[in-house]
Image 1 (cartoon, rainbow, N blue to C red):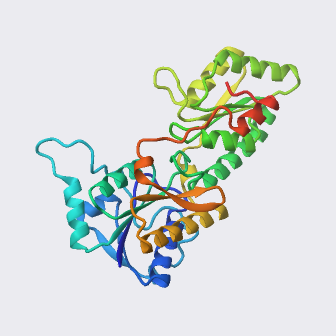
Image 2 (image 1 turned 90 degrees about the vertical axis):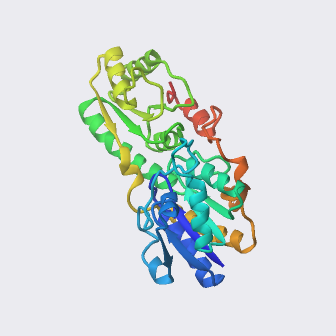
Image 3 (image 1 turned 30 degrees about the vertical axis):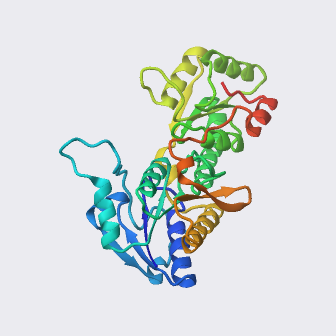
Amino acid sequence: MKIGILTSGGDCPGINATIRGVCKTAINHYGMEVYGIHSGFRGLLDNDIIPLTDKDLTGLLNRGGTILGTSREKPFKKRSATSQNKPAMMIKTIQEMQLDCLVTIGGNGTQKTAAKLAQLGVNVVSIPKTIDNDVWGTDMSFGFDTAVTIATEAIDRLHSTASSHQRVMVIEVMGHKAGWIALHSGMAGGGDIILIPELEYDIRNIGNTIIERLKKGKAYSIVVVAEGIKTIDGKKAAEYIAQEIEYETGFETRETVLGYIQRGGAPTAFDRNLATRMGGYATEMIATGQFGRMVALQGERIGSIPLEEIAGKLKLVNENHDLIVQGKRMGICFG
């Protein structure tokens, strides 16, 4: 059996560990041939495909990024009358390479594309990949734990600066439209105010919270904001919140945008193991003919879910999440 594997969308800690999990299981356990597709779905359009051997997988477990490269190619995007038929081009490449299955590693956009390829008759197995943890159908995606660990360490470091200068420190973390990173890192890092897209906030309430903290002898505050919260005039989350806090309270306020640091570098031990498990399970699915499905963490076990159930959905934070409930009980402000 010949399988092709690609990575699509933004980079994420743990992709290489997943590639390693898929390919080592395929080669060593099932005796399959594996072909790496460069630059995501663009590699299928350009026929940029190379064979992968066990030797090519050495040193991947703790390596950040993706050895296959990635792109945000959207082959099913609405075409003009004169544009190329990209889905047909990809299927032609798959047929010419005689690939029996395609393994796609990516986030929400990749799951949509994988689902559409499956509808066209391509044997697809997909693996969720995102630091944002917003892929519907899986309890967690690899990369999330690493991003939370990096963000938490950054918040830890801001405490000493905020305390020394008696400032309000606003730190913006990634997450797209979901607040998972902000919630988990904010709670783990001792944030005093945590703002996520799923919960509305009142800037006056935030200002009052900071003033009340000062009255209690707490001379500084840490505000953790998700990049996807609503702002005015298209301002970035941290910039807007810092300006509004300073206006409301008169306190010196500084913002820090953590940015792409959260996506780079070596994955945590948890993410390495989750990626390895997901990669191995994907290969098991191929061997047993379970196509048109996405690998998913379901409780403590690895399972799968049909791709058509995932496409177009986002996994967002529920207002009754236990971290939010416990945070409010402890006096943490969520807006």
